[in-house]
Length: 258
Length: 303
Image 1 (tube, each protein chain N blue to C red):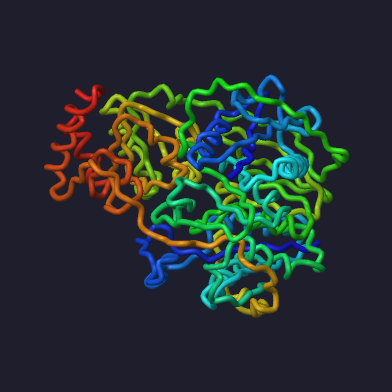
Image 2 (cartoon, rainbow over the protein chains, first blue to last red):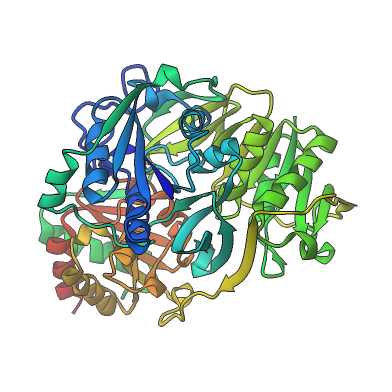
């Protein structure tokens, strides 16, 4: 059995973001990078499936981007993936979801992956398109937004998270692609021995030009900070004074605090 | 400009988000036609052509078949844009339609500026406008971003059927939400804990403020996923949508999904050490402070 996990490296979302000089994306200087949170669930689910099947499956983890994304790939290897593929593309951030999906599909076609796992969206772009578009381009079944996953003899039983806490149960035969929602499992922390072991695992590099066949279908016209809502009061400074002020405002402006 | 609007239908009923698609098309100044995979009795009350496919044949969730039905409607209507709600149904189906048409897709639109579509970037900490490079475009709109008005129109129903309804997916039914130990939709005051509270041991600090105000404890998604607070307390699109008289967001930066669940609150207080956090955009009062230092002070003064 062959598994493919698609991951993205994204900035720490607690960062303060600025627009880049060209006004087309966020400025990458001074940002700390990590594996997209949704993708950690995809890596963990792949490793759990490998454990369930007695180490038989081979897990390939793939990422597109500049050299820094190798750090995210190494984390996935330390979590238990077997080999990594780095598709080298310094300009990945500006490619649209259709192009990113087409690059992954170009890599994966003819390799007969039984199961492809991806996060349901990235934390920076948040388009929730790439996974589904990869499945469409590969012509395999797909379901999204998983908060439950079980596998038995070629059939996946997936629980999809719907709105308001409701879940939908879907059965699908492999080959298939699934996208993972937060809370699907508990992603493991790589242990030191596994980090050491990961150093010996293969990382294949492929220039993006070898796989890019599609033009972009959408483009960012401009990026900018959100407009501030006028009228909001901002309190700063001494904690005690702010507490008194806040209680005063609540008594004056709301009917529920007296 | 013509828009094809894809309705949502779940557990035997048309979802209200379907009417938000109509509001979006109006804002776009587009003619509209609609698609519903549902029951004829549930057709939206909108003056529009509604392509109806029988939910008994095609299921409430089967994106492979629903894709084919949408593509049939696209062939008949030749729309410029195909619009979905950005929901568990819409984000699952829209990219399939976009891929089949080789059309660009723009996800989770929050506004229209000079004919370009505005979306969030980095959890709404930044925004960007996106333009389409293809003749046709697939759009998903943020739920709650385009307010639906009263609707009392009369749909002209046209039925669609598929000649081949084979599918790789089998929908096996719904699993109900966990039983709630609190119904936040009825709360007048909600005090919510976010990632900024740091760890589970600090949640009682927030709960104490909720108690001192006579309100209920809410939480953002990361706090629930981390197991600090039970799911029934979760506010946001995958939790509860609330509109209390007072909402106090403690250490919540304001991800889109959370804002969508609470922005209709009458009065919003945000306590956050980051002055630029997106929650500040909708807060009536933003207190720039560490929640763990500030919240106990307020609780003590109220007591």
